[in-house]
Length: 344
Image 1: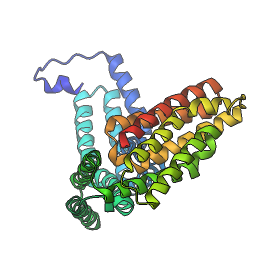
Image 2: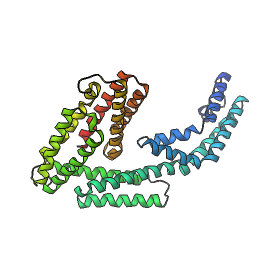
Image 3: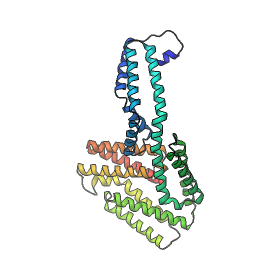
């Protein structure tokens, strides 16, 4: 409709049924316009936890009561003019409404969403620096810390667009860990090997504590044996730890690769529907933890793959269909396995 008006042609021919259908659709849009806030925020914060998205939506809506009311009024005006056959006035009203929406996005939506993204990035990077920062070179760590402070300052000053600073911070993290991997591949020195081993021990112990009960006895014992071997080597200051680190990670990957068959049979017997649903829920929690903790190191494709696999499993668990749950468990376990290799 708008394209016809801006084409420069003075002859406008529209089927009245199309105009009526447009009026009906536009009225439905006006009646549910508040839902647009949810959709916009969800699109921008799709990688973040649901709790963060919900809090951001609530905050933005609290600042947008008048805007939402005005948009509904403008859309209903456009509906009225469409129903009257006054297409030029309908398009004019819609043009004004869209300009208001663009202004609202710049003044409310973007700052609110960016603030949530910035807070999430700050919390993640601070946690990573606390846990693993000592394994980085002085230059890489200082670069991350400088960009972290720049983002904190922007948030404190309520600067409207922090996205560039968020991107810079994540890029600094990716660059630092990229060089860390390179150092690891070339030996990196005994001190660095000790750090890598300590990180591996901490990570695996945490995984076993949270999710070890979902593994078969054999798989868990295999991981625990390799974990103890690495601990002993670290305690004895052995110089070559990389092989033991690799073996420990390999045991973890193998265990989660077989998670689907173990969970399906319970180590030899058929599980009840409740057990399979519990396994599915447990895997969801594990995957969400992995996605949250290591999101900065995944590319967009991997984040999307994990997110979609988590959603698919959650829907299957809710449905109670055992075959669908098992299929979704298999898919998510495979996605987690490939992401684990990427982290390593």
